[in-house]
Image 1 (cartoon, rainbow, N blue to C red):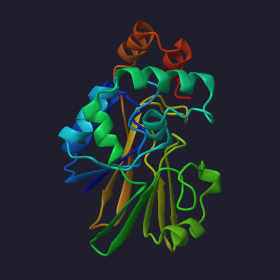
Image 2: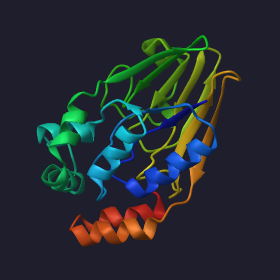
Image 3: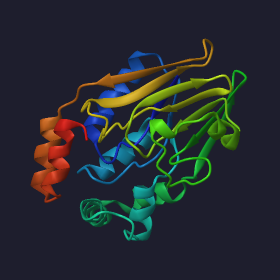
Image 4: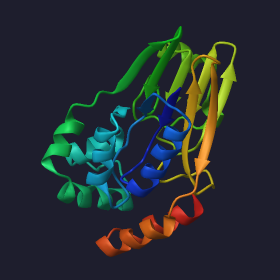
Length: 224
């Protein structure tokens, strides 16, 4: 059993709940589609949970922005959170993030599992469910193609394989505020999409307390 996650975005409280859920589901490995940081108020705690739980992850565009300081493609709210994160993140966690790669490639039980933050052709491309198509599986040389970035949980099955976005752990944008993840059963070749409640109010209060934009707190309540 493999846990699939994406886009925790410094939401340590949501990530803890997701990790507990995946542990209870008996996962033996957790793979992540990136964006460990940004938006939310717990960057160090989130990265440390990845390290402690040996989550195998790639980087996302927010992770790159924290490393480089380049927020030229970000909206003001996202850019503000990047600037705040750069002032808070520890050197040890920055060094961990610098070692991350742009894709994960696993061959398990005869399945070619490939993980990208955006898409196989562009790591920053937003691939929404309406843009899923079998050609992406060919581009990624994948039987199971895992994408993140959009914060929209979705699963599409084709004759050629499966494309899945496990949804965002830390800032869902599909109208469901619960933290999102997925479980891949490699023996049954089946993926289950999961949602779990967490203490959103606590995170909202901490966003405001540390001086991050209030809008970042409000959007958590509505899942957008």
